[in-house]
Length: 466
Image (tube, rainbow, N blue to C red; front, top):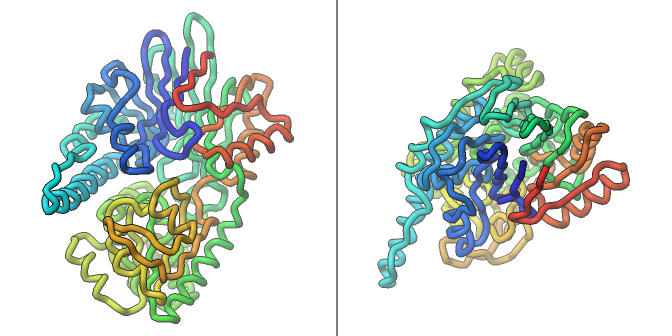
């Protein structure tokens, strides 16, 4: 049995892990690598194995850094089942199509510029046709349902509390009469997040734990404190007649922000103001949220009952569909909140909103999630005073506020609790993934202090032999 770390190894993007067992291959995650554009294209297009040799894929959740390279995998020969929770399967289908649409649109925009300069056109990473080819391969499973993706492999999903449908994966592997139990955390959520249920902790009988460590160096503030900071940002921006521009992942973070704004307005904490969700994907994703109300946490369901009011709908909320509607928002001068994808401000409509609003000091830009290195979102979070958008330089005059407490990733305290739950007598190794070196080093030190481990931080392309 071998496990190859082929993505989100000593970085926080492009999750991909290849398991070899009984002469067959099982892929855990197939995420899109995000970073410098000149580096990402080749890396995403090139697999270190033959995709046709993979028998099955299992996804922990639908975020693009975990699922977004599936169209390339299928295009290059994979035709097996893609296992995910039912909510992840529903979200994954629309997210892949949206990703393809954005890539095609962005390449069309770039190629117009190339044509004017007499340069050769470039091709999108994948197309809508490639994304649609993934749809019939999804196999939705319920939480706790045991299934067999390969001979010798039994699996079940448990709630990870990160986004709708997110899951940790409990795998029992058997080869030549030997059994090994591997627990893969996926992205771990936090207790008391809006909308989401709390994460299920690992079983203490596991042999190996592969765990994310995005915020291994930071303990988040209480989610309610982040809510108050977000509310105060909205209030002071409205007071100066500005707009709040929020780059947000269309699945998960957008719905949490909408629910928070719903609470603020419904409870009379802020005056009713226009709120726009400007992302076709977020509109479609919200419809998926409505399909799985049983996955909401108890507090959200109580809010719905008490107010007789939907969690993701209120009078001043509008979901924007067309490009024309989106463009009209930039002509408006009245206070409003615009939530738009992508979450790292690398593609999509958010770039147009930033370009049109970033130099106005009345406006605010809210950074509400982790930003990968070399992305526009990271540059804004680091308070750079000049940034490039669509090849043009802009002065950052808008207020930029980073609200880290809104993160849907576990902080250091939750990660320690998660690892402690797996630290039974069977544990042979704890492998940290999906985290940068600084975060991993801080968490490793804390894990060692708590006598948890042994702990490893595998490099890209490193192999673990069970």
